[in-house]
Length: 412
Ligand SMILES: [Zn+2]
Image (tube, rainbow, N blue to C red):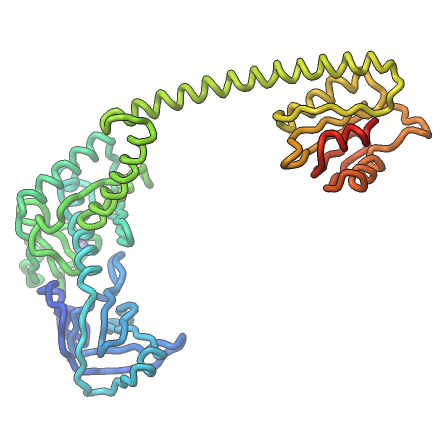
């Protein structure tokens, strides 16, 4: 028999008491559906079906896991895995009495977050007249208010929310008649007058809601806004409450302890130390760039001396910049090939880990018939020094997992 107010076949026990965890009910319908799922409809339930942005409850029925609860065409279905039901030799027949238990830890966390959202929106509505025009509850609560808020205003509402938590005011549920509902100033995302269920936070909010509710605001524990942004002319807010906020605080605390160790700083000075550190790092980065430039200049100068001393007798010259990066080696080659007709080969690395090389020659150089091409040199280096390499007739690069003395012998 359908419930007049909810339009459901199932009595929704959580609507009046969200703290009933265990229940017994009779099976109204049990259907095996696509995807290996059993859809179970019962005469009554403590399971909240997905709705209004909140996911469905989970738990156990006859020892089998209820993976989700959904409302489909006005009917509440508990969704189980067919495989598990068969493995546990459980069967569901119309008229059968079953026992169920909701996952109350999950339910309670969601109630903490959900009622925290009611409180925030109730206070924002009283102060600014804004309405909640979107709500989603997953690991965090995200909701949209239809007006702009500044950081200070959000912080002030957050503070008022936590005061309301410490006041531990009652949260109650009521089912006004359509006539009564018309006279009540409740918040609602929809135009409701029939079948309305109201959740009241004494002194703070009155809102139409379909989800399980706490007994009092003290159970929320704490409310923390994590993030906000302008959204379609309004404000999108993300918050966490209760156990989730506590877990977040513990996580932040352990990160803070690591930072305190890292910066050898007192708790209240960590961000100052981090700012100092960032500024020093930037300074060192600039200094490092300058030093690299100077070293590159010095290497180029020394290589040019070698080039001039060889007076064109050597067709290829190698040089080592052991601790340099690839850009430095390329810069030395680019600078020196302007004054050299042969091939310059720059190596960086060490005898233990091997070397990386870049070889180049001047673009547009007349390559004499007896001079070696760069691609050919890459092949010869691979044979003599191991590793790999390749590139163009202007520049090749690769690896040479060998020693400096073998490389020097190859080039002499
Ligand atoms: Zn609600």
